[in-house]
Image 1: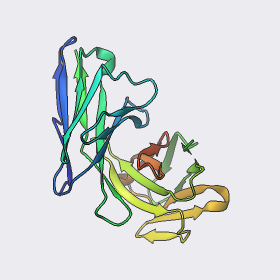
Image 2 (image 1 turned 90 degrees about the vertical axis):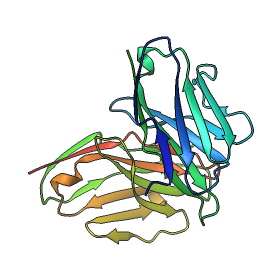
Image 3 (image 1 turned 180 degrees about the horizontal axis):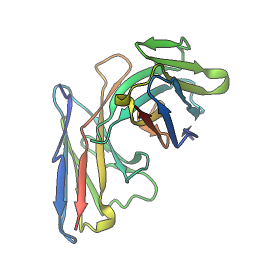
Image 4 (image 1 turned 135 degrees about the vertical axis):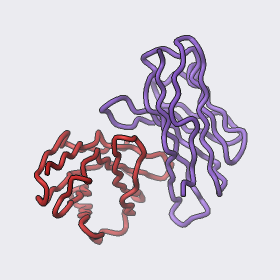
Length: 117
Length: 113
């Protein structure tokens, strides 16, 4: 079964509203989670590194005020797309590292399809 | 800087043909991991393999095989006797010490019956 769960898997929101996507590690603690965005027919691009108990680290070109990341616990990171616009429509996917497993095993969530209308 | 190049944007083969997907990577780290993922239309990433930089042994898993060549910084993926169900986008990825993963552009494989 999935060890990293994302919710919702699909969401449609109106332009100008905010939407929150959750990423949970189900049976391990993840001090670090990563958020990726994938536009249609493109690759996965790292948006930010989510650090438990501290501010997220954003990749160049990613607006931190638009994509709010909160990693309040060792098993949950949230990505909030604020004032969403149609160009934010994309596939968002998170990953988490289980450091308790040899080699720092990476697990990906199932992904979330965001459509802004 | 870390970079992964998948030069083949799309590949189309007929069922039962063998197909090789190329992956070339760049990194200054001496310790790193290489991955291949399959992404069907539903979007989820299906893990196929992970290789660490110190293990250059080639690997075979059923119809899948991987050729890791540090000398050419390549980690190619071969599907033998391809099947229609193999149709998907395949991503090669690189992860170094900071644990964030960098993906190649992906190769869209279409296997026709």
